[in-house]
Amino acid sequence: MSDLVFRAATHADLPAIVTMLVDDSLGATRESVDDPAYTAAFASIDADPRNELVVADRAGEVIGTMQLTYIPGLSHRGGERLHIEAVRIRADQRGRGLGREMIQWAVDRARERGCRLVQLTTDKRRVDAHRFYASLGFTASHEGMKLRL
Image (cartoon, rainbow, N blue to C red):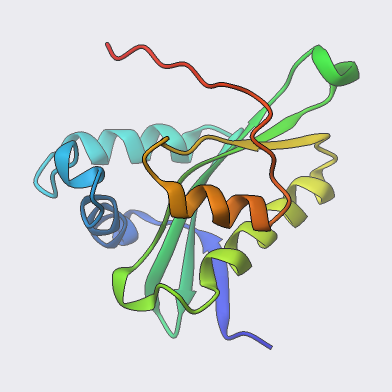
């Protein structure tokens, strides 16, 4: 049995979460630990019942994070879907199966909620992430599009 606990993030967890966002080859180019915008973003996520900012906690240390967004829709016979975003594991904890445990926890949560689909996007440059998600049963069934504003 794992000693890993998944729980809702608190404002006190924000520095650890932002550090994980910055400690990433792509995040390093767009994130900054000194940006006050994270506080407002956290408050917005925390106030939205369709969003959950989750942390993986081991012995009081935040070692992983992800954002879960529940999206209602008409397609899939009116089924709700879970979108998983901003998945990170702290650098010194990678390669230990924590990401697999974290994603499985999110998928189980979606099932419990009655979601009909779990979706996520991952940057095309993250080839290792593509293999990881495929090993969990995710398929690259759609081509994602983004427009930076």
